[in-house]
Amino acid sequence: MSSRTVLIVDDEFAIRDMLRMALELAEFRCLEADNIRTAYALIVDERPDVVLLDWMLPGGSGIELLRRLKRDDLTRDMPVIMLTAKTNEDNIIQGLDVGADDYLTKPFAPRELIARIKALLRRAHGSSEGERMAVADLVLDADSRRVLVADTPVDMGPTEFNLLQFFMSHPERAYTRGQLLDRVWGANVYVEERTVDVHIRRLRKALQSGQADYSMLIQTVRGTGYRFSTQGVT
Image 1 (tube, rainbow, N blue to C red):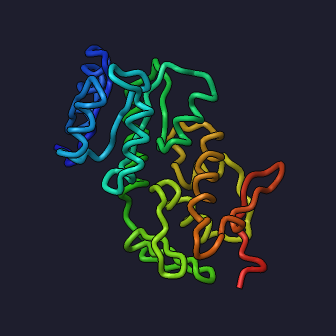
Image 2 (image 1 turned 60 degrees about the vertical axis):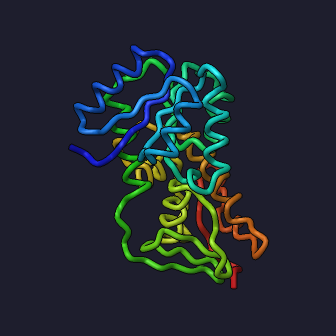
């Protein structure tokens, strides 16, 4: 049986039951909650590896719970996939901006959900390559999965860390959004290209600190995508 635990937060029993059966067949341990209060208690007590969080919940929205998780040092790095019937682009971007690592719009296939969970776990808990890379005072340590600026830890999520690690390993080359999805998210993961833009914004924001601003290292290449360039940085 897998040691990975998934918390399903949805107020519809039929959906929770369907997801639980699919996840248990894929050898995940499942926890369930139908409101944000129960969900938060389970998150604190059980520390699940992934949270599947419905947007609309009784007693408060999934977005409210997501904001709470991202404000807390103990839970801010916990991977979260939003489940939503909202297909409006603004709603989806809002969820990603608040801190969701991925999203799925209902209805969706359980196989796709499981593929995304596995990919997210690989990004969040994947094996490191023992690399320690630096640009001036910006240091990425793959063994500890830490980013430092002038010896001060930088707070960033697992997807932003993996993006930065990829960029620092492949400097001065422009990549399309599709290429970044394949290299960072994985070729078998169904994520829309606009998701890349959200995580790029979050990475740039994380690289802006009181010590230094390294956000300019992530350059937008018009008509192509993004490039990591250290030219002019000493």
